[in-house]
Image (cartoon, rainbow, N blue to C red; front, side):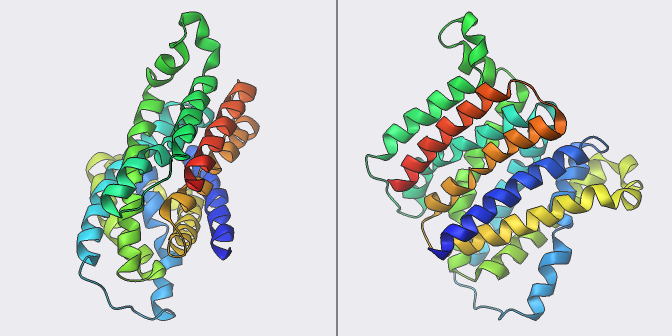
Length: 287
């Protein structure tokens, strides 16, 4: 059950990454923060090349790397945009839809099929999304869901959730054709190149401010690196759906951080909605 420890570490570091990203967005635009999320992981990951054994890369390694780079590039951009335009406590829980999407993507990509227990999990995730925004029931029975996705933040995060349901499976292909640490380094290097180009094109005026704000941007990469290493280690030991399900506990932590650190409101119904969604996530993982 060592994988469970790494999965829980993934959840904790993921929630801290959300907090660090939100703080970074108070000073910089989404392109600088997105690039920081990737580039500031390199000081933690590159030294591993001197201590790990460089693995033999299987036939599917380069295909997986290309696919993961493109999809994560899009997903991370939408992720940072979502955090920027909406509260942590209303946007981050939307990533709980990732296990729901995994019920479709895992069988297609990896041949990992759930049992019927996964379908009550789907229902709980939908109910949790309803409770997350339940104060809009005055707009009708479908008001909470319609209102939730009428906001840009949740819409952006829904795109991210779907893309991450694909990349989680692609990452497993990459890990199985190399090693957890080597795959983590490879994907960060590839993504870092893409994010640097995007930042130069979109945020030239902010680049000169980065050296004076390292204390704001550095933690984003630190927690991003810890999340990545913990997740890759965990998925090398068990099913992708198990790891991603435990990782989604980060959404409950992010709701709490949003209330405590950023004074976000409606904490009770949002936290209730998150825990219902997590219950659905657990059912899907057990399936």
